[in-house]
Image (cartoon, rainbow, N blue to C red; front, top):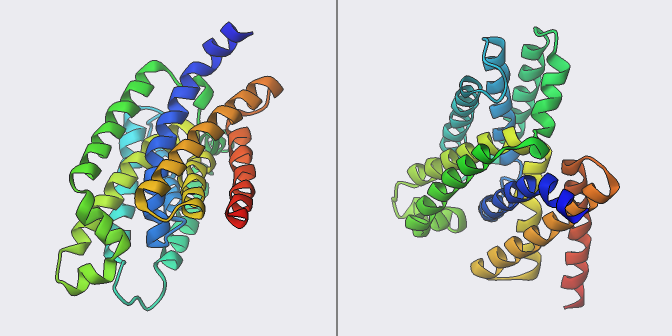
Length: 271
C-alpha cells in the first residue's frame, strides 16, 4: 500500500506543497489589504478566459487556453490596481465581488454555446490535481520561484503598499505601480493554479493558512511561518485521508482546512 500510495499521490503532493507555499504568502497580503475575494475574482476571470479560448478552438489545458486565461487575469489585475484609492467611495471588495459575479455569469453564457459546456465548467472548478504530470510540476516550480524572487527583491515597497497604503499615497510614492505588480504576479499564479487545482482549492490555499497565521502570530515572519507550517501539515493530512477513504482529493483537502480554522481559534482563545 505504501508503494502504491507514493506512486499515486507523489505528484499531487508536490503540487500541493508548491501551491500552499506561494498562496499562503499571497494570502498574507490579501488579508492585510482586506480584499478577501480577489483570488476568486481573478480565478474566475482566468476561467472566463479559458472558456473564451475553448470557444475559439483552444482545448482546455492547451497553450492557447492558458494565454487566454492569463490575458483576462492580467486585465483584472490592472482593474484592481486602478480602483484602489486612499478614500474609496465604495469598498474595493464590492468591486471585486461584481467582477467575480459578472465573470462567472459570462463563463456560463460562453459555455452554453458548447455542447460539452457542463463538463468543461466542472473541469474549471475542480482542476486535474490527481493527473498532474512532472512537466506541469516543473513549470509551476519555475514560475513560482521567479515570482518569489520578484517579491523578495521588492519586498519593502510591496509590503508597505499592503500594510501602509495610505502612508505611501500621502508620501507621493507610485503606489499604483506596486499595486499592479502585486496583482499581476497574483494573476500569473492564479492562472496556473486554477488550471491544476480548481477554483475552490486555490481559494482555500490562499485564505485559510493566512487566517491561521493571523490568529496565532503578530509579526509578519510569525504569520508566514505558521501559515506555511500548518498549510503543509493540513495538506498532507488531506491527501492521506482522500487516499484512504477513496474520496475526491480537492474536496477532502478543502474540508480538512475547514476543520483547521476552529482549532486555531481554540488555541488563540486558550492562549
